Length: 271
Ligand SMILES: Cc1ncc(COP(=O)(O)O)c(C=O)c1O
Picture (cartoon, protein in one colour):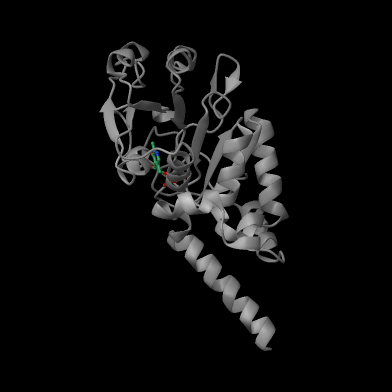
């Protein structure tokens, strides 16, 4: 990504430009947008596939699945884990509320661990005392891009049969003991919002996983029946029936996309 724009309001001595004070995007980025708009398929096209393949290769994850935002990725993570009312999740208290949105919307009980004051990430030593028979997952967040102590956290999770979700909204490109974030937890959620360190020029997100089953479900859930053969064939599909309580495609952006898709199709068919 090139940065050709100049920013007039940079504080003296400040090396990182304040993202709200002018565009960091250059002509290369603008040309990429124009190129994307010229594609036949705006929402699920080959450019999306290339981006996902490149992100998977970069992080070392088996699957990278793009979403409308990190919040959507977090909703999908809670959904594929089948978290529901009565379940408990141990979570870091040091985060943005979006980490919890998939849990709150499903009635999951959140139990806060505590943070390591030196790293501001979840202190693994505070997890085990909070585990009960109802605990299903551990939610961590890489505060300011600093990865959690994932060896210790994954060891606790494996010992107790828990899933680990990593909110890596701040951490694309971060690494932990020679492995990139995205290839450490069971499900990792990234943000490409324009205030984050890697942006898709507005909103955007990515979910990575090494688990084929999770990846398959996310692929179906994020686009609902359009990409799901059982749904198209019979209108009965175990993934989408269980998905109904949280229809993640009702985000404004997805609605806009599907509305455009419908109007383009009706224009084509009626014209
Ligand atoms: C830790 C954390 N998680 C999730 C999000 C949500 O990201 P998005 O805006 O892509 O939904 C944010 C956004 O600031 C965040 O800071």
